[in-house]
Amino acid sequence: MDPEQEYADLFAALWPRLFRMAAAITGEHQAAEDAVQAAFGKAYASWSRVRNADHPEAYLRRMVLNEILGSRRAGWFRRERAVELVETGRVVDPPDTTVVDRDAVWRAVRALPVRQRAVIVLRYYEDLSEEQIANVLGCSRGTVKSQASAALANLRRAGVPNGGDPR
Image 1: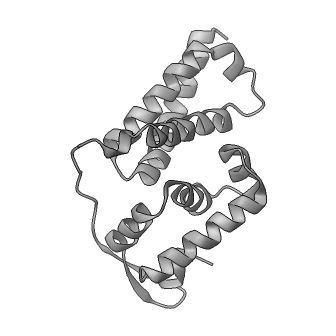
Image 2: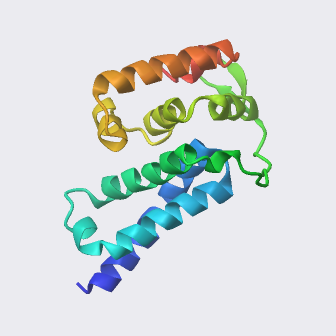
C-alpha cells in the first residue's frame, strides 16, 4: 500500500480516539487538539519508524502523551487560555444506584497531578492494562500502581464515590 495512504488511513482511524484520550487528560479541547496534531505531525515526519512499529496505535498514544507531558514541563499550562464548558449531567451507577455528577467527577480528575490523571484516563477511559500504561508512560508497573492508588485516594478525598474506581 502507498505510504501516504497508510498514514491517511491510520490518521482517520486513530484521531478521534487519541483526541478523546488527550482531552480527558488535559481537560481542554484546544490543548488536546494541539497535542494530537503535534504527535501526528511528528509521526508523519518519521512515518517509516511509526509504520514499522509493532503497535502503531500504542506508538502514537505515547507520542500524544509525551506532547502533553512535555508541554506541561515547559510551563505551557501557565499561560492564559480559553476554558470550554464541560458537558454536565447526572449518571446513575447501576451496581449501587449512586447518582454521580459527571461534571464533578471530571473536575476532580482534572485537579489531579498530570501523571495521576494520565494513569486514571489510560486505565479507566482507554481500558489499558498496568503493563500497557507503564509502556506508554515509560515507567514501571509499580509506578503505575502507586500513581493509580494516589489518584484514587485524591478522588475519594474530593468526594468522588469509590474514588472513581468502577470496580
